[in-house]
Image (tube, rainbow, N blue to C red; front, side, top):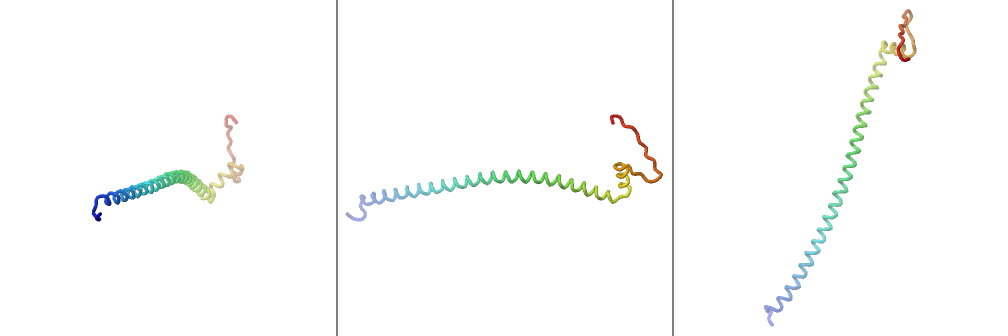
Length: 111
């Protein structure tokens, strides 16, 4: 038999075809595992991002309410530096009046 005979070519061809099929199967298996891992990671990170976005929205809302409260307190403190406002508070809460001023009281219904 010479090296160009048909019998030897078929046996070599079958062996290389089986190896190619095996490599193709391993390649598909590796790709399936990779895409499975990538999909799992994507959905896990999407859920984590959604949770963090919800927390951020709650904290932003809380920050806005605290900022509004802080601004209100700053306004009240600035008003406490005014003598006229302090006089109004003294009249209202402690019934303190300057000398010579007579309070006018009216009866309110229901009290």
